[in-house]
Amino acid sequence: MPATPKLLEEASIVARLKHLSLRTEKSYLQHIKRFILFHDKRHPKEMGEAEIRAYLSDLAVNRNVAASTQNVALAALLFLYKDVLHQTLDRIGEVERARLPSRLPVVFTKQEVAAILGKLTGSCYLAAALMYGAGLRLMECMRLRVKDLDFAYNQIHIRSGKGAKDRVTVFPAALKEPLRKHLLWVKLLHQQDLQEGFGKVMLPYALERKLPSADRK
Image 1 (spheres, rainbow, N blue to C red):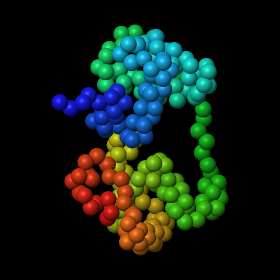
Image 2 (image 1 turned 90 degrees about the vertical axis):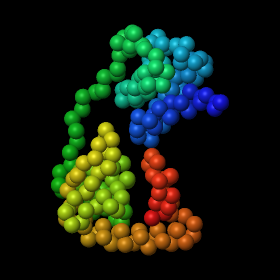
Image 3 (image 1 turned 180 degrees about the horizontal axis):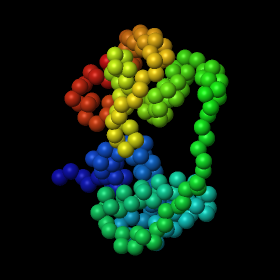
Image 4 (image 1 turned 180 degrees about the vertical axis):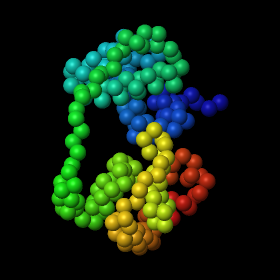
């Protein structure tokens, strides 16, 4: 009979089943662990709304965290009780979410963007120019793959963006030739890394089992 997984291991399994991003999973597990340690390692099944409020209050008053961090902590504990422990919190309405401050967004002018891009070179320039020209978020840009760049149709395919949604955005014409050169250089570098025993990448979900050699291509 297989051993019952520990609480954090079980939470990780549920997070994978719900296809949460790795960053969200890591953040949730950290807050669940801190919640347990804050209450002297009591099991969450023995606790409830009062302990959740105490933990969130400590984050706000003693640790002086941002409202967004407090809300992530609450989301992590709601995930723990609802999806992992399958435990109903009858008085969860009394646990208030921290209010995010209303701030006006700062938008650069074209001249400011040109000045910033003018100070960048190489991969940093390509990443910044892609985020500006194609409207990519930072992690969307970092996770782009070669097959996501459609040179023929002038499109960039975003896979599993915010909310685990795919979308298509424009391919800035000014970046097509610099990206071609960059991809050629990266291919040569990748071949050199493979010869030295490196060059592997992490594959999402079950791709590593389905395509054992895909992490080196």
